[in-house]
Structure formats: C-alpha cells, structure tokens
Amino acid sequence: MFRRYCLVGLAFTHLGVSRGLIATFSVFYVAFIETFGWSRAATAGALSLLIVTEGLSLPLAGSFTDRVGPRRALLLGGIVLALGLGFTATVSSLWQLYFWVGLVTALGLGLIGMVPHIAILSREFPERRGTALGLAFAGGGVGIAVLVPLSQALISRWGWPTAYMALAVSTAVLVIPPVLLFFPEAPAKLAVAAPDRTGKTEDWTVAQALRSGVFWLLFGSRVLASMGNQLIVTHQIAYAVDVGFSKLFAASVFGLMGICSIFGRIFFGYLADRIKREAAFTWVQAVSVLGIVALLLLKDDSLSLLLYAYAVFYGLGQGSRALVLSAISADIFSGKSFGAILGYFTLSIGIGGAVGSWLGGFIFDATGSYTSAFVIAALCCLVSVIAVWITPGMVAAQARGR
Image 1 (cartoon, rainbow, N blue to C red):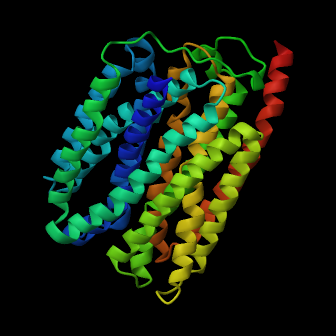
Image 2: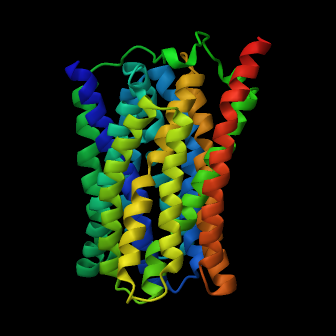
C-alpha cells in the first residue's frame, strides 16, 4: 500500500514539473518577444511545435513503457528534458528556439508526462482511478503555481537565460533521483484492469481501439478541450500586460490559478468516482467557461477582480479535463496495451494545443485583439462536453454489436 501511494507522489512530482514547465512559456514568451522582436505568432509557434512533438511522442512513450517498464522511460525523459532546458538558455535565433523547446524539451516532457503515470496509476488503483489520478494531476497545479511566478522572478532579476539554466538543474534533481528510488528494478509489463462500472472484461489491442468510433469521439473531444485551453493559457500574460497589468503581477495572479487547479483536480478526480464521469467533465468545462467570460470582460487594469475571478474559475478546471477524460479512456480501453492506446489518444492534446496556441497569436496579429480567440475557446469547451455525453451510447451500441 505504501509503495502505491509513493507512486502517486512520484506522478505528482513529475506532472508538476512537466505541466509547470509548459505553463512557464507564457512568461518566457513575453521575454523572447522583447529581446528578439519576433512576432507573437512566430514566437507562439515554438509552443505549438512543442505541443505537437510532445503529442507525437506520447504513443512512443506509451509503447516504450508497456515494453520496457516505467524506469527506463522516465529516466530517459528526465535526461532529455534537462538537456533541452539547458540548451534553451543559449538560443539566439528562432530556429534554435524551435529546436530546443519545440523538439528536444518536448520529447523529454512526453516521456515523463501523463502517459506513463496514467498507465501506472490506472493499474494500481482500478477502483479509485479518478481519485488517484486527481491527486497525481494536482501536481500539475502545484507546478504551475510555483514555476510560473518563480520563472518571472528569475527573468526579472537575472534574465531569461539564467532562468532556463535554473529550471534545467531543478528538473534533473526533481525527476531523476525519485525514479531510481521507486523503480530500482525493471517491473513487469503494465496491464490496466477495467473497473466494475464499465462491465467490460476484454483486453483491447491498439488496432481494435483505433478502429473504434468511441476512441475517435473521445479523441475529438480532447482535441477541442486542448485547443480551447491553449488559446487561453499561451496568451494570458500577454493579454494581461496589454490591458495594463505588470508582468510580475500577472504572473503572480496566474500562480493563483495553479493553486486553484490543485483543489480542482483533487475535487473533480474524487467527483468522477462518485458520479458519472461525463457529468464530472461537464462541471469542469462549466467552471472553465465562467473563467473565460471573466477574461473577456477584463478591459483595463482597474478591473483586477475580474483577473482574479478568471484565475479562480479557470484554475479550478485547469488540468481536470485531462484527468477525467483519461479516467474515461481507462474505463473503456483496458488491457496490456493501454499505455500505447493512451499514447495515441493523447496525440489529441498535441493537435488541439498546437492549433490553439498558434491560432491565438494569429488572431491577435490579424485583429489586434484576443476577443475572437477567447470566444472560440469557450465554444471549444461547450462542444467537447457534447461529444463526451455521446460516448456512453456508442459504448453500449458497440457492446451489443459484439
């Protein structure tokens, strides 16, 4: 039992590092634009490439974890991630930013990120899957709450290159030693059991999942959720600065968003074990839309309460989308190939996120405003909920067809 909860702690730490590092791009984004004079769309393109690369690496991470176990996958990811961050401190041109952030760092993030840990925890906690994932995903909130304001403080004091070097060293320390401690030997291959709520016993293969309409419906929902999220979070600090807030104040408020996401992930993970997962996902997206509305109403720095409202409401939903959808996918696509299936499923994060982060910059460059981008983000939230509610009927129809 103790080791099981140590694995939750390990996932908490790794997801805190990986999600927090991605969130820090919003502060480095402003620093890059100020230093090099790149356009917002071109600079945001580095994050788009990161999201695409991380997404493409997820099937590899899932298959690698299924085949050789979590130890090797996580160690490799920690090493690659630290190297990527360290070399990002040396960039002087856009192509270098794309290479070190968009390719190398992204590959490391994929290997230590959600796919290996969701597979591990779904195996260890089949009956309390939502709760375990909620506790683990809360690490992402801690990472955002700590790393975003910390990165801004480091940039303000010593500059963005030193900030990246500090992140590289910290990442190596936080990621690699715990893997050596909790995975001293290569474990057996992962096999994820389906909980009683699904009524399923079959062992899904990757080919069966990819031929399933249910898989693609959930995939589409995750694309929309990720697209809407990146339309918001990539540009949130730039937007706050545009309306009159200081960069440090904006980063601090968005640190509050990370704190709120900690409670949101734990609560919605618990809720997903107590009510229908589809209903839990609906609540997640509902509070997210409330946050987006607050951001849309924010027009100048005299309305700081709206910025706080955005941080609280959007923060409560931040990260919970992925954990509820991951729990749904684990309920349905159980078996020894779940890691690989999950890897293909989470390609949706890369697709939606890449489009969202780039689209936000493109819309601003074209219109001089983020209003249309934020409206599209809210619509993405709403449509993703509809897709998730269609899923149970498709699962039942598919079961009758077998």
